[in-house]
Amino acid sequence: MSDRDLMRLNGICPYFTMFPLDFPLSVLRDRSKPGEWVIDPFCGRGTTNFAGRVLGLSTFGIDSSSVAVASSQAKLAQVAPITIVRLLARILSEAPEPRDVPQGQFWELAYAPSVLHDLCKVRESLLQCCNSEARIALRGLLLGALHGPRNKNGSTSYLSNQCPRTYAPKPRYSVKYWLEHDLRPPVVDVREIVRMRAEHYYAAAMEKTRGRIVLADSRDQSAFRWFRRHSGADWVITSPPYYGMRTYIPDQWLRNWLLGGPAGVDYSMRQQLSHRSPDEFVNQLGIVWRNVAIICNNGARMVIRFGGINDRKADPRTILLNSLEGSGWRIETVISAGTASNGKRQADHFLQEGSHALEEFDVWARKIQ
Image (cartoon, rainbow, N blue to C red; front, side, top):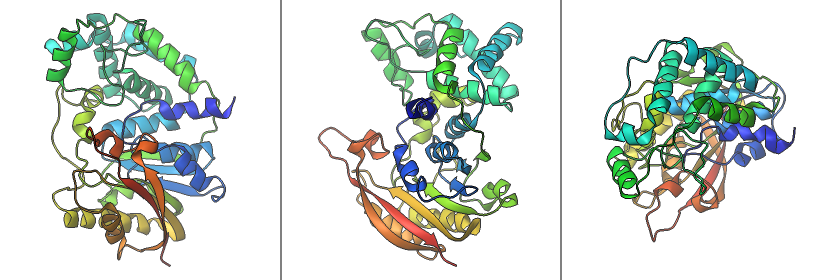
């Protein structure tokens, strides 16, 4: 297998809040040692954790988004494509008929009836049990296939009507767009799409490493409970939400539905950092850095990528540096990471027409002994 084949799994469920895989790989490849742990308290779609697996490191991640956690867990699964395909076939043939099939114009236009039926059947089966490698991988594959664009020739590797692949469009907008363009949901074979995706993402043989991704709030010390039974971490590589970015949950509402959420947009702010003021954001981010310091070895290194969005006047550099004061970490260097336009990064999704991406930067810090 080529390096490219090995890296495919990182793209199993893309969405806009991510940093490039090259970032954690470049930090760890020549600096980490066998047996070390790398952790990410804002793991998002698991890029840091996947980099750790590629390099044979043990890895631990936390996120308050169920979509992020499910995607990250899929990147740590070790399973053969045929096992995933057989699991899906067994669920579709043996599981009971779905009890909860969403109704309404959005769902009628988003998915063909047969596709929605199969999705609901698998959804309910995975909600009852998702503790095997195959089930975790199947869930991740469906999250990635749940919505996306059609090809120009009309073919598709997604299950939905025309949609973005990185975030779910809002129902009212979607219905209007589909009707105006006379777009109907494709009648696709869920088994075939899962088969193609399983062979694409899980064909590469990768070593199994120690790792865990947990659904929790990293401001709460109990979120780190599982990790405390292991030796301390030596590396922290992360990118917290940028100040003012509060739409993670509503932007992923359709994938969240697949994971047991409501069949509509959830605008709540549960378990997210407060964005009401820069000072409150700084204080809450500082809590996370202190919690992380507790489970890290003396001399552990932390690398944070951070930036900002144009509609917030607060300086992102000041916000991050202030959050590290008194947190148990000593800042060693601050390096420019370019702008969000250089890759699929957090702030790039929020740019308005005519505006420009703000500079992002990497802060290197070391745990104080």
